[in-house]
Length: 197
Length: 197
DNA sequence: AAATATGCCTAACAGATGTTAGTTTTAACG
DNA sequence: CGTTAAAACTAACATCTGTTAGGCATATTT
Image (cartoon, rainbow over all chains, first blue to last red; front, side, top):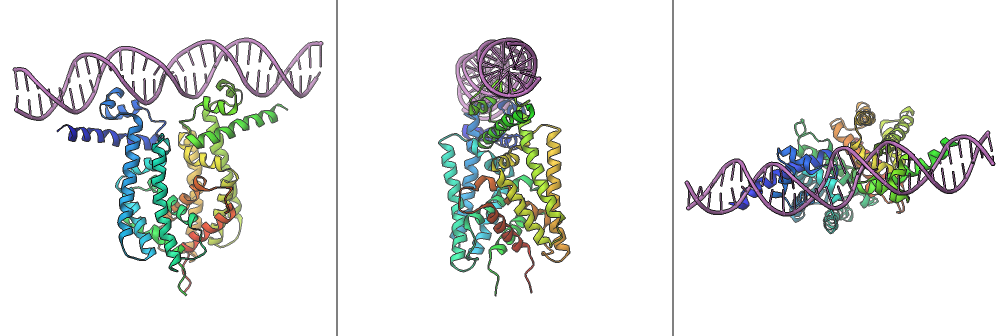
């Protein structure tokens, strides 16, 4: 029974850490801050985690895996480029909405990873972005999108919009995450899409 | 002559600090790091600045003033909403492009300001955002933009796109900042704009 | 030449940082 | 009840943190 219970408490620690990292940033969050949030002493944290950075690694790479999984599923579908893009966007937002706190950490704090983890993380990230870029390029090739758009700019704009959502989105508000995904993709896709003659 | 020379060396310090804050983040940047970048001792920095946070304040509020100035000029023009939005976007990007380093710090590190500066900063920011929101709402009222768009979502998407530019934009690359502004506003505005019947 | 101001130095401070070692309490199971 | 494992504790470490105090050298101004 050790592993199960261990995980449970360990994950409690990691979740609280995510909240803290989100609020104050990784570097400005001390292990004593985290311990206090959990009502224990700083040294006690090390029964559950190996180091401060291990927590960050967990948060970043777990989120990365979720994003990848979501896009895997979208890519397997046999639909138009704009449909794929829309599904990719909605999937991305759904993954974020499932854990806004971890998403914010994933986005803002990953740079505090040390090597070689940082390198690995950035490779995963560029790969993910490139898969979105490929969808846009496919859309251009098939005449679905305007042919004079800068794909790098487009995909970066897309990711900027997506990644800042955790900063302003209020899950208690009147607009739900699926709705956001739909509106956002509509806004972007219709900006990219060729006007029907 | 004191003030002029003082400013010159002082600004040298602030600029190097901006580079450091951008690379490592404010909290992870030590005064000894900064001193080393300048080839002096940490204590020597205090001949030029009062505190670490004073540097951050300078960077954040100077950028805020630049953004405000740019939008002031746009608002005074008597043009359509989409034209105003376009000019606002281009202006914002031009201000960022003038100092990408300070822009990145402005965006990512402002949260490390202490009170009451943080409060002041956030007020400036929300005010700036609301002025953009007002332009979009004007566009809706005058029938220029779709009437069923969520203005909060739109304006947040806009700012996300704008604010992440310093993260990926390469000033040495083939696409210049004015071009980015034009393409970006085209992409967004044509996504917002009502299709002509 | 004297006076002044600028920029940098060394030395030191008080407190915070991540982490370790070893021990004790708490709870579950046979 | 005794055993075992989990989770917490106290004490301490070495290092790093922002910052102050006071002094010295260089260059500019009077």
